[in-house]
Length: 140
Image (cartoon, rainbow, N blue to C red; front, side):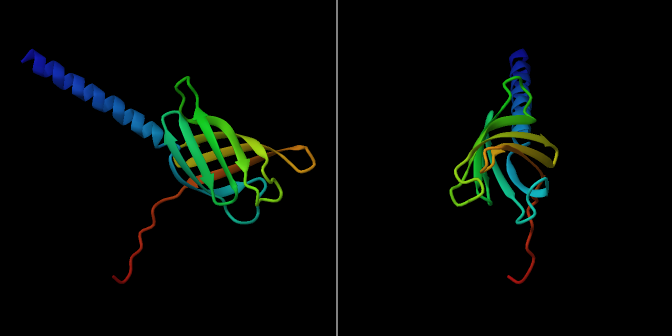
């Protein structure tokens, strides 16, 4: 009987720990839509983030992608990494940049330090909101 209780306690602990890890991973993971930026007045940026452990891959609809890593100190609300603009983005073509990300609930702040064509640095700050799944109702 004691072994059964210990086994149940062990299983409950494992489930609790794994649920906490999954909820932390969901912090960054998903689809995000731009709601504010200090630079772009054109097309709204959409970001997709896939996270695996401390590492994440970031892709966008407007010509840049990046990889980032959360802190090894256990704080999974912040990440830092490197990215690159695609060649078809004339303003920043093939330029590398530093990226910082912070997530809180359904908001994501992205700060990119990129180099302009004249060689000066530019800080791009963009705020995103988590995209929710839109259900389509209509004729079947």
